Image 1 (spheres, rainbow, N blue to C red):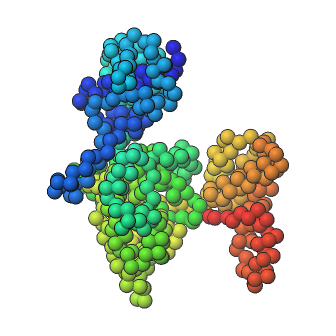
Image 2: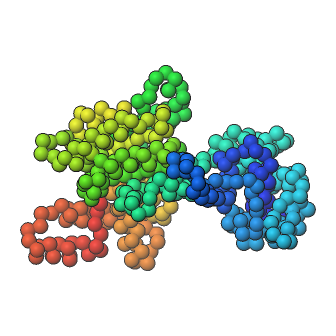
Length: 457
């Protein structure tokens, strides 16, 4: 029997078991199946509470499986053809609905063909089969491995649609980026971290796991972290990878955009950012360029910025991992611009230094994992790249790959990478030159960077 049949039977069995067992909830459905069963809330203009309590997308019983639904969920082009010869399946001639006729027969057929790894991704089926002989996956284990519903893109979009007015809040939507965990490709395993960074992340994960205990003993001021370090050292990347690891929505805002583009609305937008995070909780709220608002206050500062600073500090005080299930991560390249009032709001400060030679070698090994490089020596390259960040090293490798492609090669050499390091340093020096006049700028722009690349830390 083909894998296509297994895919379709698993989907049918999941829909059947979920419909029959009211103890199962949306978090028991694999995300790949949840997405085909979302239903929009019905409009209820007569309900006075409608404006007070947003109506969310929902998954309603019974879960009806048609050919179209099964195709979307499984990727099998002709679902019924894949299972039509099985004794426990049927298709309704009138509605086209696919269903099971014998639950026990379907379960036994499935268990003969599905391994533990597959069952571990489906809590609905795991709950029904965990007591069967030969099954070593429990419902709790499968539930733990299933991404929670609050992390689904459809769920996130539904919440944002309920909270934002498309016309009034269009500007605000441009300022806040919300990523679902599955949209974040980088994981913590893909990163090279310092011992301090690893330690702080472990502490944070333990705090999330034991937040009820922390609340019971009165430790509520926790889960507010400030990442400090030069550009390109991984502050944003680590924050996103943490969201992926914890299956949490990632709410990202650059405060410089809020302050520079909509000065009169700055305080209001700061408030709204925190409200979005609370609505999407549990989530990570990442505030980049933290120093652009929470900077040392000066007597000649614009009144709108003063209000924004006060609003920001108050909002940080009011949000809590324990109460609101929001992890707050601030990031700054300029810690010297933060005043004492800003520093006090964070219970942990994590340093992101430029990587040392050993870290650079590890970063290079990870970046080049899927590349073919003859006689690659990451230690030699690490020695040549003192002062470069992880972001810089990715730029170097990108340049080496593009140069090789220009010569119709997909296999690299060590010399390709060494050349790319030299090219990177030349461009970096050129970028930092003080241009004397327009003619000098034309010469520099024309000859010094012929590929049109700019380096961003």
